[in-house]
Image 1 (cartoon, rainbow, N blue to C red):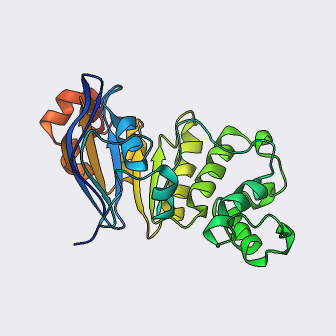
Image 2: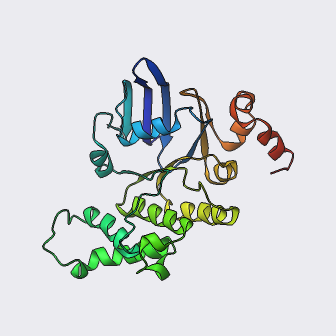
Length: 256
């Protein structure tokens, strides 16, 4: 069995306070996993540990079998992991096309070749146009990112996140602040752009979680109390008591 991401007894202390308390998690290649839990459970800290923003106090984190817990975020990114953030993180004064092309350049090996004219980089421009179509912003190609709607900005950030060709994608609350119709479209977009990739997402919207995830990891007080299919998690009494509560009972009864 091939694992894209493995956490082995990962712990994180801030001073004397233990935030992550021995998390072990194995995500198979190509799996879509949603991380859920109450506020303050440690979900964002877990993402920061995986992506290299924080180093764990102890434990191992492996990306495609290679330890990454002592590497910097950019080193981890070059090894094939990319993440988005809760707060939209794009260049507001660049066009949609320019935002995506910035993300594409490094993956194609151009690195710091500032002396080249970007308009002449045919492969980079073609890849950027492909991404524009994937995230359905081809009609907004030359619009400044600051002038996009909120949902469009989030779609652009998804495009930037996948532009480098990473095979493991971390999305931090990708649908936060969206309407129901925007959320529905966005779930479909995420499914399409992550085909063949491994996806780990933090999400509060249970509709998104149950509509997107192959498996759900439930984090409570820095520990994973369940990691299973949506159906099994929905039926887990410990999860219902700790987090899902009446919303699960409502959904089982056909409510929303």
